[in-house]
Length: 382
Image (cartoon, rainbow, N blue to C red; front, side):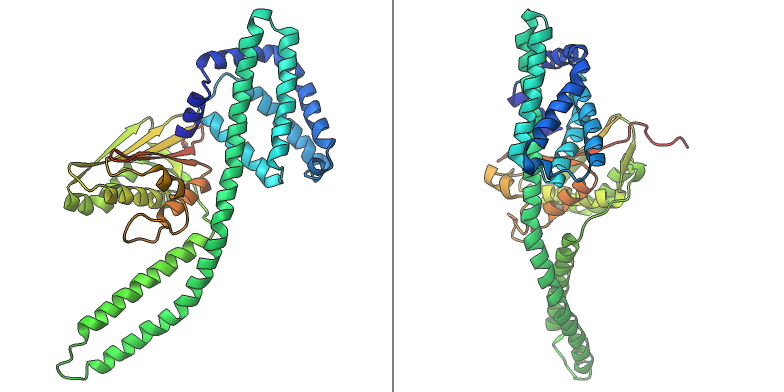
């Protein structure tokens, strides 16, 4: 996953750090219960953090979750599945209402407890590198959790204009329907007039009504929660559908469309929703190419726990300012379009409990990466 790899590189988290953490596990694991107790003692000491918890049963569940979290922290494997699990935990912190500064404080309790254990029980020559590895992995954890708060902020930022736009679209739709009905009645009357030349005018009016109706429908659909019904489907079939839907456009624009599949063929997703997301991304890629030869590539990678889908192009690319705003409601760099496409893609990916990343350079092109979890058991045998 691009974001996680980028964070690891930026923080200089290395395979040696991963090895140190795995080496620490038998030393730290006997103290997991003590660390959990210290964590909740600190939370209960503050009235505001104590108020977050609704019942003792909830606290007991959270204690068990923290034990699992600690076990995975020293598991030695820090890949995409690790990132996705941690992102879910971050969203859970947001959902229960734990404020960011308390989350930082709670993480510091864990950090202090672990470092103290290292200095008390590990070999002297290994204390410094292993403590550094702990600091880096906990900083990674903090980054993932802060990202969850940021994602929640962006979601809230979209909700108000989306609700307002949906209300306006609903109000616009009624007079639009009346207008379309009256045009139909007018057309019937005009047919009785000899040498009537109003046909092109009526067609233009109908075309504009269809355009506005489509816009109001898209706005109202965006404001609704997206639900997904996941099932096993074929990656090759998905690629074929993309080729079929976009073949004419690709031919007309002389853009080469290529596809790759690595790993098993089976995807675990809502195929209709994923097709909608990919159609949006590939259409955007085509529209971003203003030179020849143009290229768009769809790459699907399946492993035991994740599906990664990359849509890349050699188009105009995006500036950092455009990348910052690209998921904003109604933001578009095109002369046409609603500015809802990427926001809808993001909602679809998040409904799959996945993540959407982008890398882009002006003049070189853009790559959107979708990462969604894939059950380790794989599809049932037929």
